[in-house]
Length: 309
Ligand code: GRG
Image (cartoon, rainbow, N blue to C red):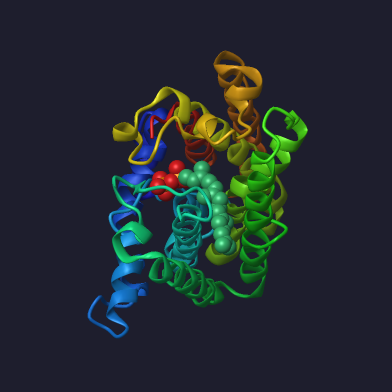
């Protein structure tokens, strides 16, 4: 989408229009990155593709491309690095679904990777997706690689997953602060890194980095609170994954601790916090098209809380 086109759209449509323009390019970039199904070892490559296509919302690569755009960089330059975020995210879903973790049979409306290919192949498909991600993000340079490594590792997503599993052993005893600690790592770290990687890869203005990080943290928190809410209020058919699973596993969640109404209020407050950062990010990035870029960030935040899947 050109800046001229974006400026003519009603503000609430900007993230939708951005997604319409970029989602097919994300699919093509992922398709080009993944080995073909007939390349040996074919079973492993089939499993990787099963996990990756058809995808989900592709939120993390879209966040990276939004970051490139709003920081004054070039989203096209960021496309391969943006795809690395989806590779890491999809690996985490494959491993998260394994019997030793959440033990789920449905993901993105299809049998989970281990149900379709067996546990060993699913484990290795996750490993291979993670490794592929680092090859892809390398195109954006050392800052992007460091950002992704920190977010994906024991100080980020994997650390959050450990906290999440440990919390299952003491249902009812997890505090709100502990829950936020888990969410910030399990979900928030990769979402925040998406904005960092997008700025680095797209060649955006470094002045926008810190406010974009703060935006990413608020968005990541809002996203996981909504995930907790949807687990209670939606069906598996709507989500394409198991529903009503958190309570059954004794997981600590926002609705479990605070109820649905208060959880919804918190998600909206977090989106408002992110929206308030939009003008700060655009001012730090400088350049033309501020209204359009601000609208893109505002709409992305609002879409994350209004989402149904
Ligand atoms: C290293 C053995 C090993 C396991 C790692 C890191 C990990 C397991 C799990 C990550 C934790 C995780 C899956 C967090 C949940 C985050 C979340 C809200 C996932 C759903 O994301 P969406 O809604 O999914 O963006 P789609 O399908 O749309 O991409």
